[in-house]
Length: 432
Image (cartoon, rainbow, N blue to C red; front, side, top):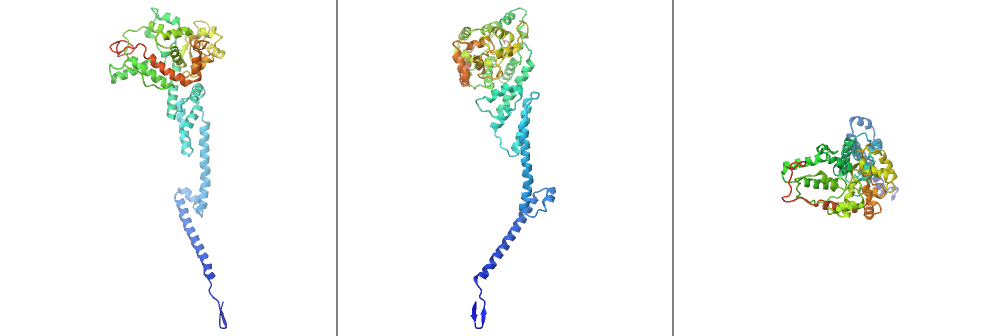
């Protein structure tokens, strides 16, 4: 206060002016918020469909509007994720339907999961599909689960397609009295029949039409490159490719330039193949006669992890050998291979119960467990000189794979016809 004569005049202080400032600031802040809320609210509403706009246009603030939408649709989104996840987990493959078709259905569900924002890497997808394979695929499932090399989804689908084709061919060929391609196991009675005048080799068919595939390849090659690639080279390359497709390593150095013989002899071919009654010494001797070592013989014998044999080839072992035959195998083979001659002679059994259509080391695991189907198989692990190598292959699949490749290459070098010897056939089934 200032004293001016008789009057006291109030003085303007600094506090008076500063008391007005917060009110102005609050007003400006409120107006700015109202403007921002107006813009944000209308921006959200403009993105809604008409029916939703009518529902939410009465909400006053953008925050309330956002919370209402988030509460509704986050709950629905979580529910959709749970629904799709449950659909994936509950999906079960069945034996009555194509596995490839079911894999495609599963991939659609996986796509829905990815669309919902769930992260599922390829390794998990592969493992999940393998785990969902139907009951009759149990052996193949176990084979895939124990693969050393991680598979891509594309690789898995290729393998499943091949296995499904194999199973379909096996069903079509069931009851056929012959055995596929390189897995033919002829008994002595069959050989005698082959020498009979009444026997007509031209009527002999192989289940799965394996030689027809060679014919198809030869036909295609001849169209592009006539008179250059021999049937022998086609067999050598397809042998390599088959090993790779069936699960073992690739090798690049397949020697080419072979020519086909101008004469053929089924009897000579049969006499070169050791019969299923062979003991270890005879097996070693037979392979040695063509320049292959005992180690080569053992590695190449591992090919018996695929293919089948007739009852006549293992009946004697099934009923006469007990000291080196697992009882579970005896019971398994009893149903499809009766004891009496002439009963079920042509019934087939897989040489390897575990993975009959894939090339791995289960053949040797079976031998160590006394589950060799043929007498000649079990002779490789029966207290003889080959036991240590068989045991090594059963424990170390990579060792078997390496030795198999080496021996396959050596086998391809057995007395080939080259240069001007022999001929390049136009048709693999007959000379020119």
